[in-house]
Image (tube, rainbow over all chains, first blue to last red; front, side, top):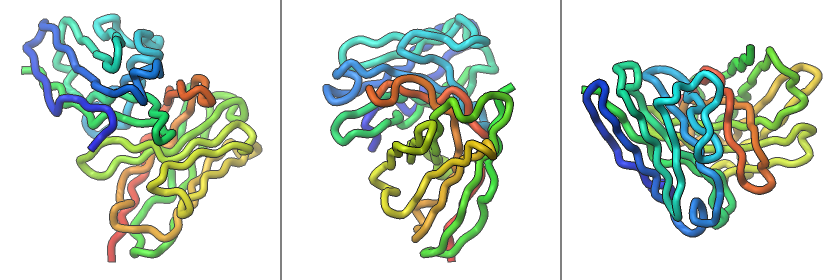
Length: 111
Length: 123
């Protein structure tokens, strides 16, 4: 059971918008710790997608955006493309116990 | 470009030991914190350990504290994970990753990852 809760799966048709939630608590996201998002394509290592809640590393398309509010965060993907089919993980810090934590991961399927 | 290459994985019996290595290139290794993360087959990610630039400060997840030891050799641009008393539940792909952000405040993250090395613990 992950400290950060993500839906196991989401799906959308090409060109559509999907959102992936990451629900935490007062000991992690609700304490103001930043949220990060990673994309893991099939058979590859995770790749940083969003850092510090809303920021994209160089090279990440602006179709990907992040937000944080209260004890939750979200990753939005607009203009879905087949290449976006992957697992997505959120990450933050939890101060009880003191540890860095990942969400359980969400599989994004492009229909 | 930033490159991280893990090695040392393999099949080991329960109770055995293994040492993973991570060779870094393309940047100044000594300027960064590093971490180890694992992913059991078909499952999610678990952050195991972080080491500071000099190795003076180290974090371990409860699941591996006392059994795993992280270390680094800045002269060799290398990161290590010594794993002792291995259990079946330690079977996973182990990734090394470069750490960014302000870890003392909790806000750190992984901006570059290796390709991973598979560890299988089985009799």
